[in-house]
Length: 224
Image 1 (tube, one colour):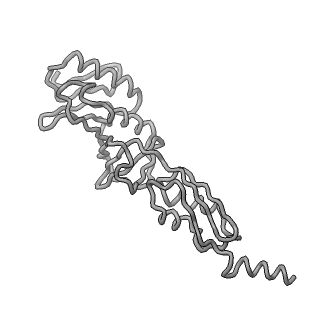
Image 2 (spheres, helix red, strand yellow):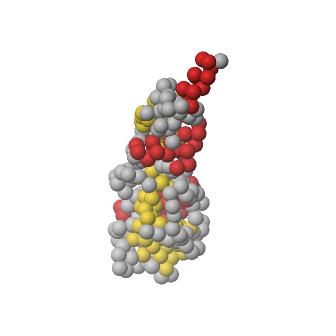
Image 3 (cartoon, one colour):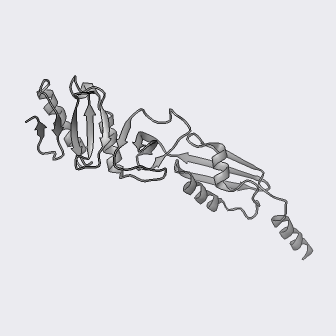
């Protein structure tokens, strides 16, 4: 009984506390943020839960896809992070977020941590952890990768905008007297891109206000 009491006292007293938490795989998040979110530092090694620490990390840090946590008696813990891979920069309101292929928005401490491909979301402000439709993100990424050489010479400075109205995804080009291509939703985005490329190739000099390919089987042009 005395031995059992001693073991219990040791496990819940000031001993066997986690004094060192090692972090691996941190790029978009700081080590301090991971340690704080895990709740492991100074926790009792015998009662600390790796699964609870993992849940806390995933909830607190949207940049993480997953985290593997090990408790190492007597006083150590190891956290291996799996971070999200951004494919776009998503501007909404006054903030710019990174977004991965799953549509999760998150921030990064690395200013160069994502491709220089941007989408401006005019619909509403966003916050870290929000989820977008992955199909929409994929379609926006395809538009953001389009360069002037794939459209026509006056399609300079292409900018992808997600509008709040029926036009949906829009590619705006040029400055001042520029024009735009209206794609609508993400459905059949490859067909829409092919259609507009063919039209612009066949009409390299035509004055345009917009080209509308929201219905991928037809095309509307202004001025008509």
